[in-house]
Amino acid sequence: SFKYLGVHIDSQLRWTVQAQKGVANATQWIMQYHRLTKISTGINSKLMRLLYISVALPKMTYALDVWYTP
Image 1 (cartoon, rainbow, N blue to C red):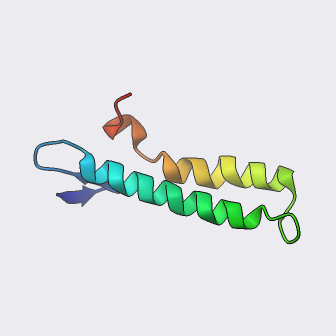
Image 2 (image 1 turned 60 degrees about the vertical axis):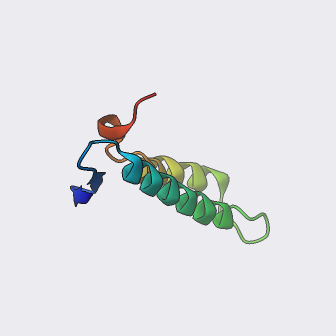
Image 3 (image 1 turned 45 degrees about the vertical axis):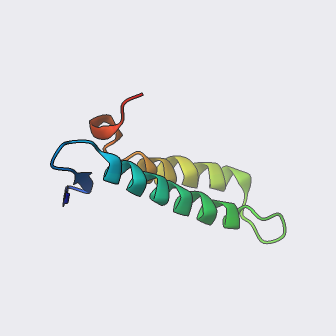
């Protein structure tokens, strides 16, 4: 497989590598997001929503329309 514009492409176009990388990336972002939402040291919920919509969602769903089949 090779990586083109951030998308991992298999020689048979199976997208398994891309799916695995997408799950790993989403897990990493969710864990970081969870650390910021702690009650004692976390930031405001409005700011967390803005951060999630503007940063986390685009990072997790990059090129989703190319490789994802529902």
